[in-house]
Every structure is written in structure tokens, then in C-alpha cells.
Length: 147
Image (tube, rainbow, N blue to C red; front, side, top):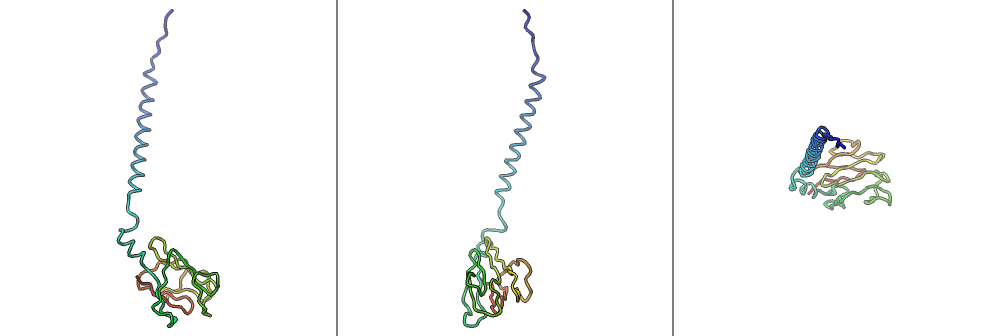
């Protein structure tokens, strides 16, 4: 009986090439992910620490002047008892504004208040980034962004 001989080289060689291409693509993807993950996030560590130390210092009302409020990680200011910072000010809405500190990025957002929220005398629409020295007005309350 004659044994039939089959030439598998024609089938095996393309499969070997395919496996090599898949392996190269896999390792290229792993390398790309490793490079992206190892990139520094928005600025140096020193810059992130500097921004993380930002706080709000009362300017008005005068009897609260120089008092500081830490924004860690967020708080809501208003007249309502459900707010994190409740102030009896007739110009404040029940839930007036939200201050947030997202990894050193300090922001303020008006929550649909009647009298608005102002940063450096400009009416806030949406979320606004705050920097050291900015003056924030919510109702009759004035804050300065400080370190």
C-alpha cells in the first residue's frame, strides 16, 4: 500500500507568518499602552501640589473676613440647610453654587441661582476654573482664592 504524502509546507508557512504578525501587533499595542500610562498627568508634581493647596478666604461679610474654607473635594454654598456651607444672606439662593477641587483643579459652578455667581466681576456660565487671586461673589459673599 502506498502512503500518500502531503506537503504541509504550503499551509504551515502562511500560518507561521500570521502568528508572527499577530505577536508583533500584540507587543506593539502593549508597548503603546505602557508609554501612554507612563506619561505625566497635567504638569509636574510641584505644580499639582501648588494648585491643591488653593482655598477660599472670606472678604465679605466683614465679620468673617480672613476666615478660610478648604475645598476638599467639593461643597455647595447657599441659604438652605442641606448645603455644606449655609449662610443667612438674602442674596444667596437656597443652593447657590458648587465649588469643586478635582486633583488641584479648583472650579466654581452656579447652580441656577437667582442673583448669579461672579468671578472677577464676570457672570459665571457653567463651570469656571479658578486661579490664585480670583475674586468670587455669591450673593453678598465675597471670597478670594488663596493658597
